[in-house]
Amino acid sequence: MRTEAAKRVELVFSLFDANGNGVIDSDDFDLMTGRVLEAAAASDDGAKDALRAAFRRYWTTLAAELDADGDGVITVDEFRPFVLDPARFGDTIAEFAEALSALGDPDGDGLIERPLFVSLMTAIGFEEANVHALFDAFGPDSEDRVTVATWSAGIKDYYAPDLAGIPGDQLVAARAL
Ligand SMILES: [Ca+2]
Ligand SMILES: [Ca+2]
Figure (cartoon, rainbow, N blue to C red):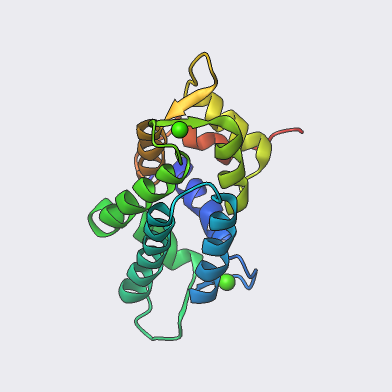
């Protein structure tokens, strides 16, 4: 596991701990799902349902695989190696990547404009300056758009244990505002 990969998922853990109690639990996922859907007002019900289902699967996969003692919470030391194991978590991340990136494209033309991308990612809790840096690293076109496929692939890469120097590392960067 690369240090960069560990840092990426530790950041996700801290953001997904939406109620701030230091562990991830079912309540966190309800809060996070609500925040993201609020930023996705322009999306249709199918896209919103897919996002709800993807967040639910993210949580239930963690709970089923990691919460052996049944106390309903996941620690960062449990989370990190598990979500960075493509054999165990790759399918869940693939569904999540498809669902989240689709929210960026409510008109279905395959392209995501920067303002909606920023709204969705800041709803999750990423720093706005880092979100802009990520969008720039994705190589937007002359009209400042990236493809849904680019974002989806970027999310999957974010959880790849052996990748470093990828666009997703922009989310972890400390940046003077
Ligand atoms: Ca929590
Ligand atoms: Ca679009």
